[in-house]
Image (cartoon, rainbow, N blue to C red; front, side, top):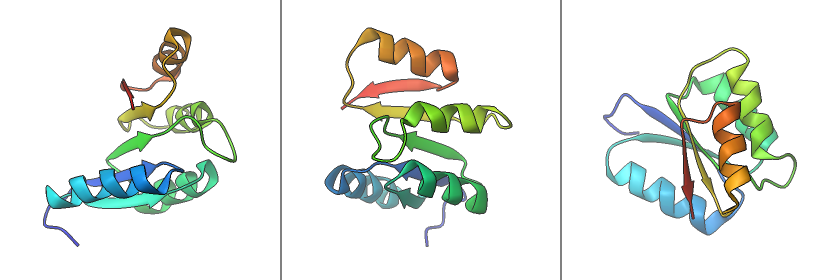
Length: 105
């Protein structure tokens, strides 16, 4: 466990990307939680009170936008979308649903 008080939840189905982001954050002192599906992400989010979410949109069980809507229904937790989707509409939709930023892989 790290000394940083901030908890970051990574929701990413690609293990190599999830592992890379997790390693970078842990190296910088953050406490990192990770999930590979939207359902697992929702469970981790509720049970651990994440301070920030890094979210992929292309998840195997549900579109990541559903997670954004879920969180925004009762929270202002910052959400950064990290997605391979490069279409402008996807970026606009994510931000309109309440994501705080959108980064293309």
